[in-house]
Length: 184
Length: 238
Image 1 (cartoon, helix red, strand yellow):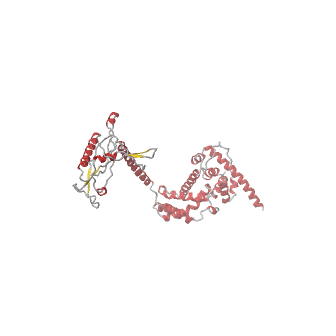
Image 2 (image 1 turned 90 degrees about the vertical axis):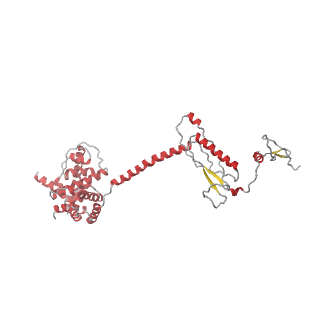
Image 3 (image 1 turned 45 degrees about the vertical axis):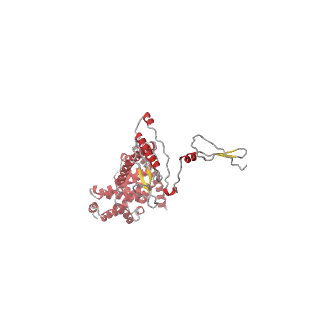
């Protein structure tokens, strides 16, 4: 399916092209939303909002490849998620000084399945989870995160540190379970 | 280092793995699409439309409020002015030229008073009323068989802003007695009333009850004397 053609048709207001684009990216975007929001209903609502904005502003988009489209769409979804979280006032994080950097056990994560990694991230508290997602998964720096979430840069760093330590703890727990499962 | 980066990429890549995360995907994609499609095709609300209504309401209020205030002020002015003669209708008996003259006099006096307080009184409307009850509301030229009714309309006076001395000078006109309108047929037969009888009728009759239970009262005696004269008359059975 030629995405560039779909984009062109969508710009002309074709509902069929819109549906094709939706079918193509809806599941991926749903995963993104679910990573930021625990509630499935909220994630679905944000997905609708994000696609609505995408179709409304598609005329401003210049197609430069599938990856660019995916990144653009993902950015819209993340922004919508952050807006909802801000609206729900969940970012009531106390300003904290930057904690020391804790290295993440990437190998341990690699040994886990997609579902297990997803569950580990979802189990993190909302502040930790958001900072972890933005820094580790999306690759943003602390200044960007601080601006997006409306928190101090140091707070972002400490949140990430705590998120990582909690994740390590959970990973260790998972590892023990994994070892136990293997030994059985 | 390279292997670490590859591993890092690997676990991050897993998060976009749709096969491994089937449970997190949309359960009913078509229903979600229908919702989205309906929302996209929904006509955007005209936000400015509300402001048009608000502006219209403000304009209306801006017109109504000053009008009401001005009207209220005018009412207050009318209330504060001396009350005009509320003599609306006055019946004049048939063939009584004296009373007609009196009415004419009173109307001229009233006119003079009105001129004195600088008011704008409309001229009294003379409505003829015929003897026939059924023939009413017909403006007929007054003749000898016609009873005249004088109607005065309420007067609105604009009180000028004057000092205390001027306001004292323009004392309010006393309210005149309001006469009941009586049709000629209700009056019955005309009775010749002498002036003496009319005078005595005005005198108050009184009764005295003494210890002997003898009641004395003054009879209505025709008298031209203005002083009070009591003619005692014993009415007790003894």
